[in-house]
Amino acid sequence: MKINNVSNLLRKQFPTAVFDILDKSLSVGSFPEWDSLAHFNFLLLVEESYSIRFTLEEISDMKSISDIVETLSNKGISI
Image 1 (cartoon, rainbow, N blue to C red):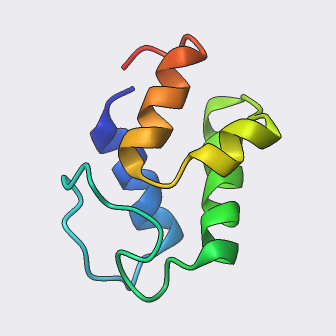
Image 2: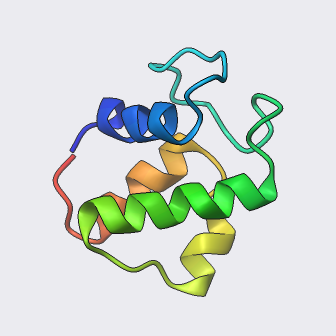
């Protein structure tokens, strides 16, 4: 999996939002649609897409695309 793949999930979650899909610094609040509830739903989409589960600690630590990619890497998902 590459950052681009996570960004594509972000596009799926927020189809009308305007953002640079290649921007690794995208994080909660980068655009109006990405609030805390939407972020939680996005993390659920990531879990479902990669058949994994995040711990509560991981969920609270992941705020950006880079954080999510790092967490996935730590779980052994090839980046």
